[in-house]
Image (cartoon, rainbow, N blue to C red):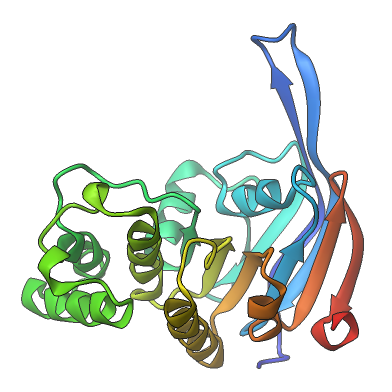
Length: 243
């Protein structure tokens, strides 16, 4: 793990929601959240349902526009505030450096699984035949039946869709990977494969933030644990201090 610089620094992150269809009801997703991560570090985020875990992940990815605070991301020798960067810059970073694995797979209907993965590489300049070969390798790694590779994942089971979702993120070897319950729908054997793949990515320098409810999986992956309650940070501890 590198100790030369912080790849990600979150400072005073706050996200508020106004429910306009419910008499402008005010909700707080997270408040004054701060942490930093070195290149190659993996932080697990835990806490009860509704504590604001997914809000943090979505603010970093900029699915949500933060209400306050900074999300400083180091790229190309300069710092970019993801909370304020132009949309065009966010799109560029998503295509090149930052990946997000949600609990649900969202893809264009009728596009085969192998093409969904290959597209991640062709957008980065890979020849199509080599991209499809690498996509097949990742589908095989995730124990997706070869008979399904030319089928749209919209017809897959929930667990199969989650495996495609993971493969799509892992195949690009991003610099920053955001994970929302990455092993929630997986069988024990596939969990082992995912853990191995994520640990390999970390060794190669990928920085990760992941939401977990499975403590056993988290023990085998993360360096630090960020515990949330009621939208705020309760504690940040080394994994060894938690177990």
